[in-house]
Amino acid sequence: RLSLELKTLHIAEEAVAFMKREASRFRDFLLESFRAVPAMATLPDGGVPADGVLACLPTDVATAFEDEFLHGEE
Image (cartoon, rainbow, N blue to C red; front, side, top):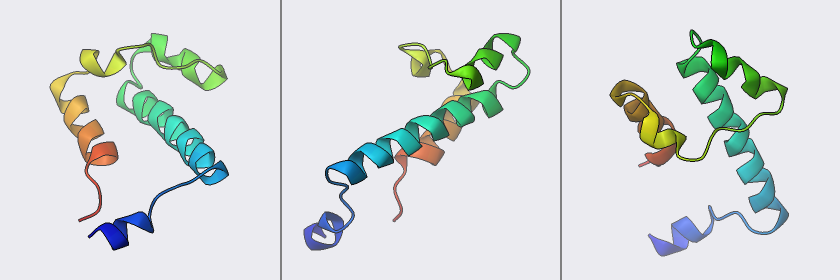
């Protein structure tokens, strides 16, 4: 599958743009997951998720994160 997967790699500016999109998508994921938690309301104004935030996610949110971000297309 190497030849197929090499075509999907992001290089240079494309990699930077991809990471920025994923960081934004992650912030949106956290906001949606914790909509009822007032402290999370500070993220849209430029805040960033705290270091280690994944270790603090409840099991259902951690599972949703895995499904959304870690399970590649088969």
